[in-house]
Structures are given as structure tokens and as C-alpha cells.
Length: 106
Ligand code: FES
View (cartoon, rainbow, N blue to C red):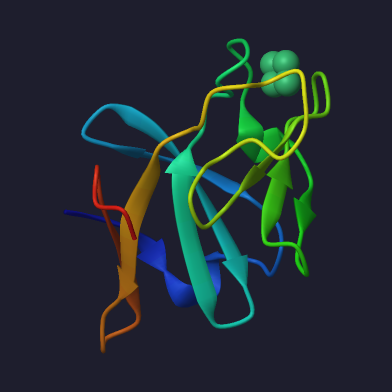
């Protein structure tokens, strides 16, 4: 479990790269909901935090070849990626800090 920032550090629908125990994680805020997924695409070594977020679909798009991934379960929703990305547990504490636990499935 690592604190990755405060609620106000995260802009709506703008992915942000953080590191948790040396692991690159992409944090996405959509309104009051927070998501944490692997920051590296499962297709090739590109950062998902540089891609776009689809708020209604709860997906993030890899900017390199356009695969989208579910922020809920990490599964690819479109080719060329075929393998899921990891989804991590993320929570907001009462004091407004945001923390991520690797490997939790949210
Ligand atoms: S590197 Fe992400 S879809 Fe190819």
C-alpha cells in the first residue's frame, strides 16, 4: 500500500503515472471514482498514462496502436492487444490521500 497523492492532484479523466514499489501504475480519476491499472500496455512497452480516457466506457486507450482497456478488469476491448493489464486496488482515505495496493483487484 503506497500513498500516490491527494485527491486534488488528480484531474478528471486525465491519466497520471505514479510508481508503487517500483511498479509503473496509471491512476485515472473519473469524477469521484479512482482506478489504478498497469501503466505499461500489454501489447508493447508504451505508457497508457499518455493515452486518452473514455469516461462513459470506463476505458483507457493506448496511444501507440489504439487498443482500449477496461479500467474495471484490465481486459483489452480492441486489438491489437490481446492480454489484460493488471488492475490494482485504489482507495481514498478520509484525509484525502489516495493509496494504491499492487495486485489487489480493485
Ligand atoms: S503498444 Fe499499446 S496497443 Fe500497441
